[in-house]
Structures are given as structure tokens and as C-alpha cells.
Image (tube, rainbow, N blue to C red):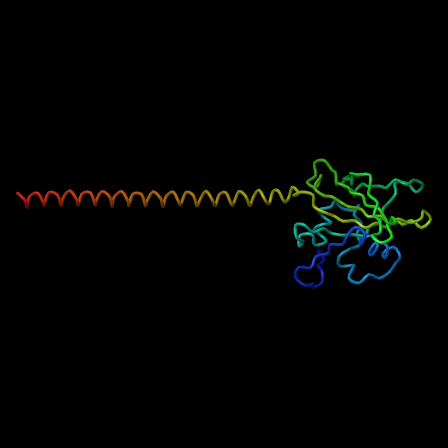
Amino acid sequence: MEEHRPFLAHGFQFRPSDEELIEHYLKKKVSRIFIPLAEYFIRDCNLYEKKPSEIWDSHGGSFLNADEDLYFFTQLKKKSSKGSRIDRKVGSSVGTWQGEDAGKDIVSGQSKIKIGSKNWFRYKKQGCEDHGAWIMYEYTLHMPKNQATNYVLCRLRKNQPTGHDIMKYGSAKKRKLKGFQDNSNQSEQVADIEMDRLLTHQQNQQQNYMDYQEVAAAVLT
């Protein structure tokens, strides 16, 4: 079921900075501090339960502008209770979120102290229309080890058109091309008719001029 945002002034977009996402949203989420309206823009969702296109559609992604993202709070799951490695596999589809960088420290603009980190991932599953088509930025709160949390804030973004989008675009393009060809054919037919009319008009004018010359010659003789 798709979720919709509350009524907002035209032109409003949710565009928090990296620092704001960690300091004002993730930190408060972990600290259980109420954040007004946050639930409309940052939803609780297990991003490792379904493939990204399904999550995108079920949370109203189709209503966003092309340059907008979806934001989620999600909980990471370790591969083993004693280890530190995170299980990045996605549901039963055996897709995975593959890390694409070593991470970036996010510091406070005022204190210049590290408040968290940002990593980005790309969805991978060969043979799936979602393969390589989705990017996820993961924000982690910097905390002492004894206070560490498995909550992270993620930003989901379309990386390129999915297979479904390409099919829709291809169909639309074919319809547009067919329409153009039909219009071109109609234009050619109209042009042929106009050319025939012009030639007929010129022939009639030429015949009238010849008739005029014959009449004039007869009068003079």
C-alpha cells in the first residue's frame, strides 16, 4: 500500500544535508526523541526484506520528482552473533547491497567533530531488472562501542531506469515514432495533392495564354 505525504506548500522538498540526517534525525531516532513530521519523510522499513523497486513503489516513490530520494530507518543484521560483518543479502531473491566505497566521515559544521559516517551501496543481482539500477546511501551514527546501535538511516535513489521503465519508455518511443511516421505519410500525401493542383493550375494558365495568342493573331489578320 502506497503512503502519501501530508499537504505541503508547493515547491517544498525534503533535502536534508548529510550532517542534518545524522544529527537531527538518526541521533534523535536512536535516542527516542520525537521528531515532528519525520514519519512522513523517513519511514521505518527493513530494506533487506524486498528488492529496492518493490520498496520504492510501496512507499510512494512513483510520486516523487526525478531528482528526489526516499529515506528510511532500518536495522542492520550481523552475519553471526559474535562477528561484526553485516549481512547485506536481500530477501529470498538472493540479491545483495554491494559496498562501493570505503566510507566518508561526517563532521559537525560547528564543532568539527565526527558525528557519523556515510557509505554507499549498489544493488546487485544478475538477471534481475533491479541489477545496478539502485543506489543506497547508508548513514551511521558515531558512538562509543558500548553504546553502538544497529539502527542506520538510508537514502534510496534510482541510479538508472529499471527494466520496467525501459520497456515503458521503449513502448512510448515506438508509439511516438509511429505517430511521426503516420504524420509524415499524411504530410507527403497532402504535398502530392498540392503539387498536382499547382501543376494543373500552371497547365491551365499556359493553355489560356496560348488560346489568347491564337485569338489575338486571328484579329490582327
